[in-house]
Image 1 (cartoon, each protein chain N blue to C red):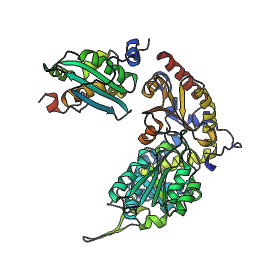
Image 2 (cartoon, rainbow over the protein chains, first blue to last red):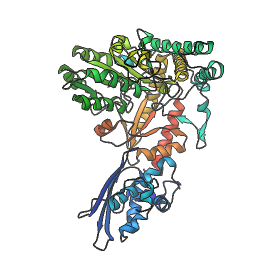
Image 3 (cartoon, each protein chain N blue to C red):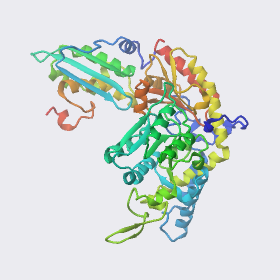
Image 4 (cartoon, one colour):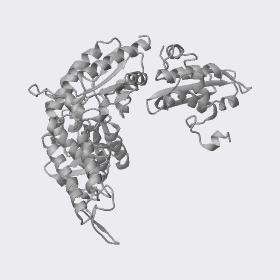
Length: 137
Length: 419
């Protein structure tokens, strides 16, 4: 089996979970990777208790970016916005379970960037946040 | 399409001998023999170029145009000799019309600033095309904004050919400047510049040609093309990174203000005012990348010795071999015209179900370097309805066998994706 394009990665790519627009979304953010033109839009429906009731994404791009978004949305449901803030680059890469070369890292992180944009209005690439943001100020 | 008429009488290249001149081509990538098919991005360098640069650094390095000692004189002579070689290479009427810049991008910006800001006025029309690399698009788009001029962008047909009917019609409506590429970096399609220049001249337009993808691969003759400015990069044509050229008609260059101010570009400076140096040094402020320019001169020697017509014929033969094989693969789209007479050695393709970045990653495993992305061609990608393509681009040292390695690797990639 291919060490990057593993079966579950290709499965998430071909059959993305939580794919499509989310009606009634309370939070929404569109982002692109200018390097390759990959696109992700994250939609969150956050309840009054501050928990994510539902999450969807739309987008197009490579297998890594789309599978990463699919896998990420699967674990976001039920989390509070505060908990989402704690999701970082290493978390996403570990969850993907594959070794990504430096040239493809942004493919893997675009979905987290869009998620943080939707949840917190954060616009930095995960792992490249300015110090204040990383400290959660 | 005089540029691409297929020369059939050319002796074929001795590719094995050429490859022996390029040390990097015997490297491996991911444990496989390197297959360098990213030549539209940058080319590899022969020993002759590296040697020419080594000689300067090790034997007579000194800043040009300044010292009165022997080393400076020798280096200055080598630098100006490189300029003369480039003038001959593009059949420029005079070496003083050759301005050294870092790359085609800088050359095109030089024209847009130093000529554009004094010559494009509110209400003027700037005509360009959807085929342009961002380097010959964004400077004109921004100039149009600054000057209050109108930017007219000519479309392509569904096969990526410039819409000549539209271009002619728009030029007949009047244009101050026409900025267009000789050969598309994204599709490899060749524009009939000489024919287009005739229409532009009738409209009184100044014509700026981006030759970054044509000068390395075909004979470029500025007098036959009839354009007013033409720019290209040295690193795409066997020369070092940091070498580039913009050619302009002396009559235009003389009337232009400088692009950059500083040392070497002045003749006299007082507290109140400055006077500019003669052409071409008026446009070469500061210490030029003179060693790179000398390296580009050696690259021109190399290309000239092999022969541009033979290089072009070789690349056409590679395209004739590769194109049908790629098209025969299920789900594969090749962008641009499929008639080899209308294109150079750039093949932009897509395999349904595999994003170009994934394709490039899988090709990399087989040692193949291609470009995947938008190729600095956002307007064109939008027009084609894609976000990215995979681009294989060839040069004189590529082989039929490498084309076959590429096709096999594409088949392997399809297997990985279950296609």
